[in-house]
Image (cartoon, rainbow, N blue to C red):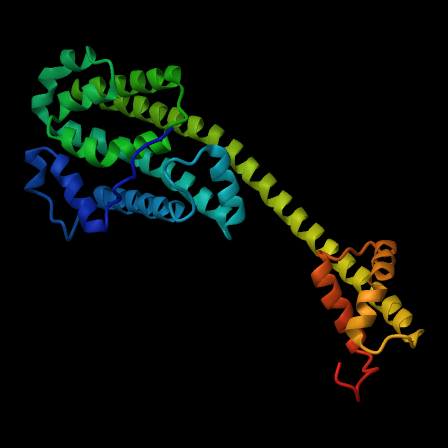
Length: 300
């Protein structure tokens, strides 16, 4: 799913300002930004942890990456699996606390109790939020909607309907003064959300681990291949030098290399060593011959 780049909050103060902007007027006057109520302070810390984990995530991937690309990118990145784990854990914690904070705020805004029937008639999260807090529209549109789309995008239509049903049940109970029942709905909503996210996270995590294993195997195979190539090169050079020293008909390293090169290529094949080109092959053979210092007194 392609979404626009998330406008992540720059700092904790910006996050606090946005949260307070969504709160009912009756609560705002009682809040000291420098000394937040404990519940709100915990929520701010958790949601900002989520923001930081998203920022780390975006150092590795981009908005338009598919799951396959994301898996490969995280597998190649040092600590990529830890980045993914932190994102998943902070995401679940943040959404769970957001739900709890939401109903505690709604509980204090008594005028909403008259809107229970209107809320019952809503068909989506957006509709319900607009009824509860009309001023939330701008904030949700510019800041949160993309975040939700990106990090809850693997939710099926059926599951979204189930989540909304639990959300609406929680909200109606809270506004009707049935706080215990609202808490039950909230717990069910949090559990349903986390279970859905968990199943996708488990699948992604397994794929990342598999890709890490493949990369390690390829790295090991590359080392073995490099070692084998070095061994083949060494064996070929020894035989090539022996061949060169066994004849006296050449007056320079260059002439000897040009004449003996076809035989040396065949020697290389015997040791699973292949020159990458004729030009480089000649240069390599000349350097092998030079190492003998056979023509040290001659300028060749």
